[in-house]
Image 1 (cartoon, rainbow, N blue to C red):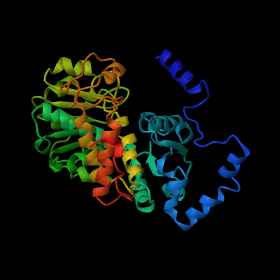
Image 2 (tube, rainbow, N blue to C red):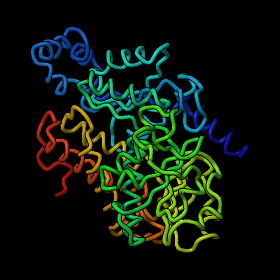
Image 3 (cartoon, one colour):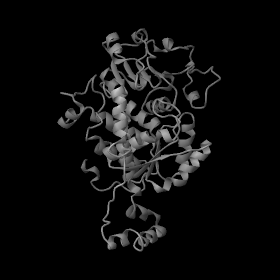
Image 4 (spheres, one colour):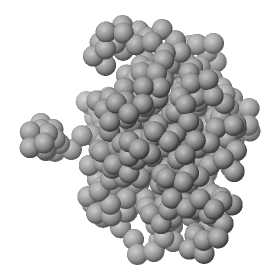
Amino acid sequence: MTDLRQKALDYHAHPKPGKISVALTTAADTVDDLSLAYSPGVAEPVREIADNSDAVYRYTNKGNTVAVISNGTAILGLGNLGPLASKPVMEGKALLFKRFADIDSFDIEVKHNTTEDFINTVANIADTFGGINLEDIKAPECFAIEKALIERCKVPVFHDDQHGTAIVTTAALLNALDIQGKQLKSAKIVCMGAGAAAIACMELLITCGAQRENIYMLDRKGVIHTRRDDLNEFKKLFANNTDKRTLDDVIDGADVFVGVSGANLLSAPQLKLMAENPVVFACSNPDPEIKPELAHATRDDLIMATGRSDYPNQVNNVLCFPFIFRGALDVRARQINDAMKVAAVEAIRQIARLDVPDSVLRASGCATLEFGKQYIIPKPMDPRLLPKVALAVAKAAVESGVAGIDLPTNYMNID
């Protein structure tokens, strides 16, 4: 752990502090270049944009930019450490946008006194960018923030902790259920955790066919049920009309366990209570709700996924958010709606069923990868994610009526 700490600090400090920089895309070598880049030449695109706001996409980089914005109230699993402490994470997201989808991303850390302050700040700068990626904002404030910004902004606003997690989780879970011979519509699902990611995951599963009455969500006080009087409006959506009160009660006969909560909260005896061929997603980081070694020693019929890269079946948001934004930006989508999310789910899950390229095997350090219990979701380095997910999202944006332009000809050069 000491070695990892020092390596991480050195990585962020050298060769220059931070992980991102700004690069020039046009010549700036001569006096003539500078006269075009700035005064007097820059006045010409200014006039064009003033006459027609859509010209901003032709003469500036707006159409290829995403702002990654946080207030630092829920940084990774570290909690509320403030906006400045969130900057390394936001720079990391910017790095991933560029690495995986060639999107120019800028991190913005907002210091504010009220939720309305934060909303106003983001809304007032939103037109600068092609899209807004909200990150590491605690629940329940994150729900109100995203809703208000979607209503006020003309560009897509996407809280990745909610929807990125939900999309990747749903894609992996649908594949796992197929392998286990189960149907989402009849699956009994236990969700350990009731924060932003948990609620978004369950809502997207419902959109894809899960039955709300088959979902049992737990927070720190136990099962969320209809006779509790301490629930916020978001938890109330998952208040089950049941007499069951504890994890022991609801895990009995469950087909699926989704953990977005904390370490070591699912015990081996509880795992034994699940139905035949269970699916266990223990996604708490860095320590899952149950260690994979213990889970596999307890049940030989399960499919296991975590949020960690050192185990098979990593549920990783990088499989989703760069490509969702790539597709949304390329058709100038006004929002990222349910149709686009479901399209991303389907594209991601289908990639896992394809033969795996040698380049992916080498990058992941695997001799072989084949669709099955140990491989239910693509690896982040899979080059097919960009064209297939971006195309699916862009098509869904056009078909659902939220795109500003039609799909470009021969987009991504695939059918």
